[in-house]
Amino acid sequence: MNKKYTILVVDDKLENLQYLDKILKDEDYDIRATPDAMMALEASKLNKPDLILLDIKMPNIDGYELCSMIKKEENLKDIPIIFISALDSVEDKVKAFEEGGVDYITKPFEPKEIKARVKTQLQIHKSKIMIERLYEQQDLFVKKIMHEMNTPVSIISLNSELLEKKYGMLKEIDAIKASTKTLSSIYGDLSYKIKKHTREYKISQINLLNFVSSRVLFFDELANIKDININIECSEDFDVFINRYELERVIDNTLSNAIKYSKESGEINIYFGKENENYLLIIEDFGIGIEKSDLVFEAYYQQSNKKLGLGLGLNIVKEICDKYKIKIEVESEKNRGTKFIFNIDSIVKKEI
Figure 1 (tube, rainbow, N blue to C red):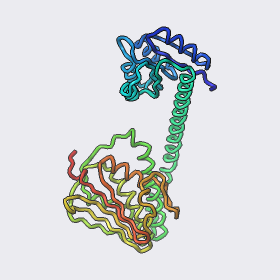
Figure 2: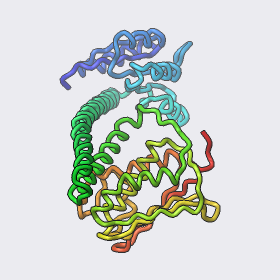
Figure 3: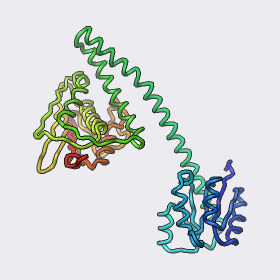
Figure 4: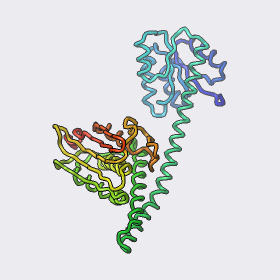
């Protein structure tokens, strides 16, 4: 280990502090020790340790309480805490883990066990920090890509509309507009993945017929390129209660997937209404089908024919549906097509 790790030992017995100090100093750790729980908390705030060895049975504030207090501090909550105790019951161990401990060592101490467990938890903690930093770098990289991507897509979209006004409707212009719609959808997926934990998605009341019609219109050029006809059937006009952007991701990803895997001059049917006391939304295509329907909602899953896409769309659909308790059923047959059936009772019978 290149870094000299700091370990805080908290135990009300002086002999235990001295014994642990002796064991761990052999490993070249920087050892800090205290018999007082509140002193340990304040010391951690001033100089954050890399790991805490914490006794359970202490006067005034026991180890469970101190662990809970540490985990409530934003700057300290990620410190790995190993409980040390003479208590050996399953209940005590379970409670230790419930309070946020990462390991549990029973007294009397075995030097080799102490060293091994401390070393393991420090390595795990180091790996977690590295992974978090990689995720941060990944997010920054994706945000930069999105920023660089958004401007040219907007320019292409604007100029294709100007060309259409000048030269009329041409297949070449439709192809350009269709490609910008595909890029726009990918941009939407990336944006949702990055912002879903920080952005507030407020629920609104949405007329489903109007909303679905607008999304079909959005993908008009993409469908026209393959001469695909999209039919909308509505047995009952009703509103749903969901965030507009999240509903867009569900409809767009399912519909674009249907277009992508449909055959030339095919059809896509969109139905919504009430059947057997359940409100359903169904998007059906008659294309090549899904090879492994049980894997279709996994992140980065793509079929072997390697169609354009990141493999994130349907994973996002599943995340949003789980959030709103929308049940999804997938029926697919090779070269016969695929049907996505959404039971949307949970967003029809809800109010803002």
